[in-house]
Image (cartoon, rainbow, N blue to C red; front, side, top):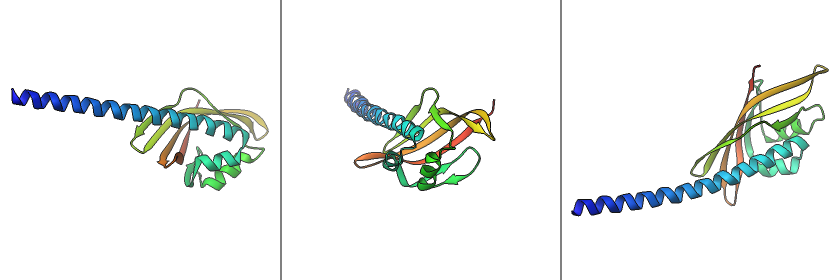
Length: 147
């Protein structure tokens, strides 16, 4: 009888903790996905001020051609008129791990490649961390999808 009560208490406490974590996780997930949308829009416009707020000063970006960039290099490349327009392509998925969130998704770029129209699709992985009072992106990696 006593063991049954202990088990019942542990189950109740465990389920309420799991629910609380799920609510906190879903809130973080929603916030980071909203920031991803803002990041996508700022990238399309080459909006350096917004990108500086969203990207950590120590950001590491790995491009689909294997090059790496820091925050200032990435922002500079997105502001260049020759940079192809980048648009989100499909749903993004966020996985919350405490104070970190990993977002995966697809995007496409449209522009000119050696003077010819080009359309590319790629997968991305962004890692966000909570730095009170907000979330910032600390790393980004892309991989081109070969048609």
